[in-house]
Image 1: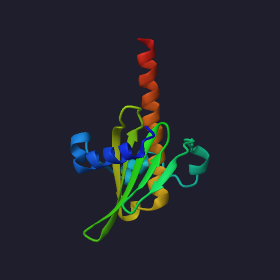
Image 2 (image 1 turned 45 degrees about the vertical axis):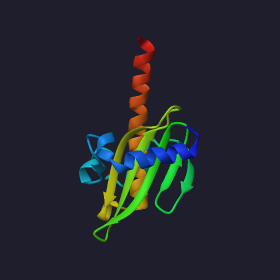
Image 3 (image 1 turned 135 degrees about the horizontal axis):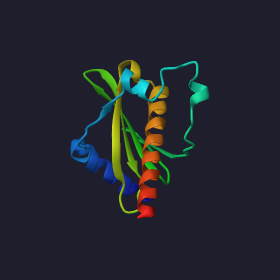
Image 4 (image 1 turned 45 degrees about the horizontal axis):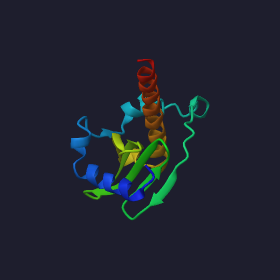
Length: 142
């Protein structure tokens, strides 16, 4: 989907009622998630990273950053709730017909640094891509 106005409309639609689009809710970045993604081992992190080589077009607005490539659309939305900064990140598959929201995560407090948000985003993108590859192989074999 290359039409930016459609991307923006989709974002407005899903952000109004995110629980309708993501019944499992928003995942929160915490120690458990960092451990799951092996982001707590600072000494071996650089060696163990299987960096997902994703290049994105970046569209910046007052309210959010939008990252778009052929596979994904990502919205990074900073907010303040009760004077506490929080960053919401929504990830959608970039399908030709319509995007498909896959998941969202939120970072706050000590977990709300740009480096950590981007590292977690990279891990989720990698996980989603692996799942899509498996689904593609299953569809292809049937």
